[in-house]
Image 1 (cartoon, rainbow, N blue to C red):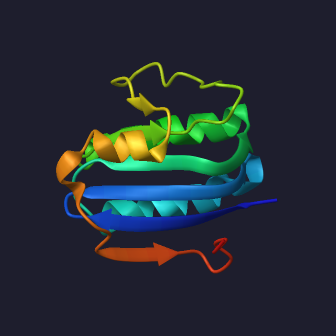
Image 2 (cartoon, helix red, strand yellow; image 1 turned 135 degrees about the vertical axis):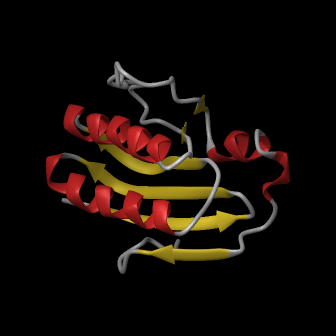
Amino acid sequence: MTIEWRYTVQQDLGVLSLAGFLGADAVGRFTGAVGWAVARGTGPVVLDLTRLRGWSAGGQLAVAEAARRLRSAGRTLELAAIPADGSLVPGGDGAPMPVHPDLAAALAAHRGAGAEQRAWRSDAWPTA
């Protein structure tokens, strides 16, 4: 099983939402989605994990690598709604990632984010 993703831009804030399971077979697709976000936005990126059913240790390390990649582009990564088990493999060599209980809290932390301005998604992104 792989992941589906959706990336939206709201002024100077990006929201990368994932659905599915972020395991070894989905890391390449996730890395591509992060590349999409790097190329199409500015400011922080909130990784919305509301629809993520879980993640492996390798998937969590891919998230830490995404944080490093964004940081090298002058941006930050924040997490929203981490999977229910609360696990998160620390990146070890980077700044801590803010973790929000849900997407609403993450958006509230960026009060001026505004309405969605543009969105992209993978073909099978769940619409309901």
